[in-house]
Image 1 (spheres, rainbow, N blue to C red):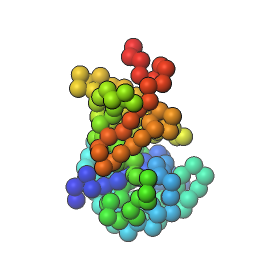
Image 2: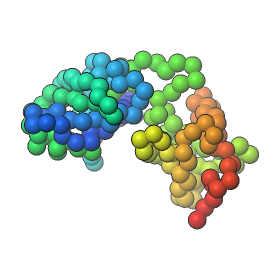
Image 3: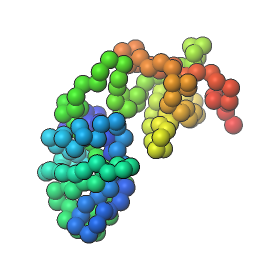
Length: 174
């Protein structure tokens, strides 16, 4: 399976209990769909995707508690901390009109409302309530932009670009 076909939907943050369960920070809006996915992929820190044999879990405040096949001890669960969980794109429902998966933002060209190119979205950083886009210019300079309607008023997946507002202080380089 190509990793480009996978949509990362969560990150294992820590072990939960003594029988191999893990606490998962969920990136999307519908954790039920994540739990119902027919198959999950584990992406260990620094490694490639590995298919999981099975999973089950429940929604709890602030995330998910999941039991992954093959993980039967607290130590094994602790070793998975920092790993990501992904679902194959074809196993997810198609986004509705004006909806997209966060992973679809990666690689988009970022331009200002005046049409000036800032570079491409190279990374997404989820800080709880705030998603931050890392945009890398052709000169290698990184610009961090909060992903909000005020800062990014337009996302056009068909055109492969998004528009960044030129709000005071937002694009100032230090």
